[in-house]
Amino acid sequence: MHVPNVNRLLDRLGKPGRDFAARAELFGGGALVAGRETVRPERAYDWDGLRRGADPKRPAWLFQYTLRGWGVLETRGAVLRVPAEAAFLVRLPSAHRYHAAADCPEWEFFWMLIEQPEVDARLARHRNLRNVVIPPGETAEVARQAAAVLEAAHFKREDFDVEAALFDWMIGMERRAFARMHPPEPRQRLLDTVRRMLLERLDEPLRIDALADAFGMSRSNFAHHFQRTTGAAPAEVLRGLRLDEAARLLREGRLSVKEVAATAGFPNVSHFCRLFRRHFGVPPGAWRRHPVAPPRPDSC
Image (cartoon, rainbow, N blue to C red; front, side, top):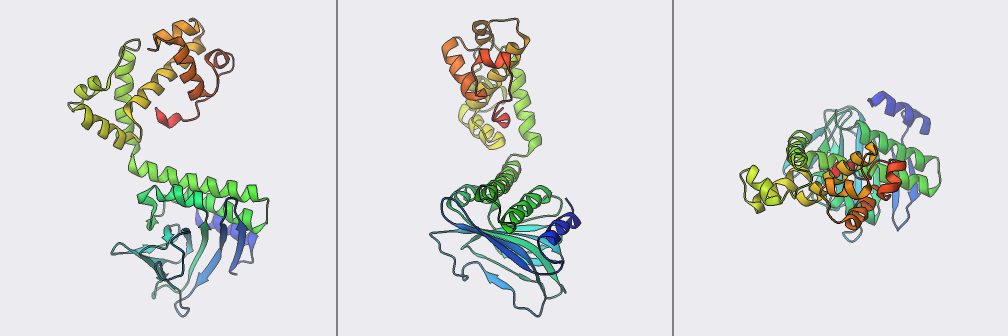
């Protein structure tokens, strides 16, 4: 999504070039305020994250996306430019400062200020989301999601609509954080290797010790490496791979549920059925009749 598309949406919400803001109360306590704004060098626009009156017991998050011009975020000793199609995310209160640039004639942006306990708890888990600039080229999806939140709040839609849009944006931010912590290429290479080793002897136990030996690591070092690279524990991924293979065998329809369980490495059919239902949301027999996607495809 390029800046003109965002501008077209914002122009529907308020007169072109005019500042505006909207507010919505949120379930579970808290509120959201969002809007569009333009600042110029002659206007005092300088916010210190430790001196703006935010309550440490009720932290808030500010997402600000540049439409035109540029601004500056200072954090962790770095001075970072926030140009068009870039955004920043900061937690309030915390040690940061953002302000207009003296050499920029106009800085136009839209923003969301969110105070909601669950949003704070989830975003705060990701260290690489706190007080950061998201560069152009990486903001398209989260900017679209943020604009949807602003639109829902502006048109005074049902509270559920505002909250649904907000959580959609929050999950988009979490996905970005996960992808940066676990880059897809090394993660996928590791998962592909483990999948190949598992399928070579699917009906036999594949223990963590054997995987560690194959990678030339101790069990402890391999477990830490695997968790750091994939974001999941080895046992969780192995179980998910076996269940996915069981689903494939069920879809083929040649084997009974008991035979599928044994072939996929689950000697206890009752235990297999419980795990399958937890993973896919339905028991094996029902899945065979009406296959559905697993709820967490990234787990394996």
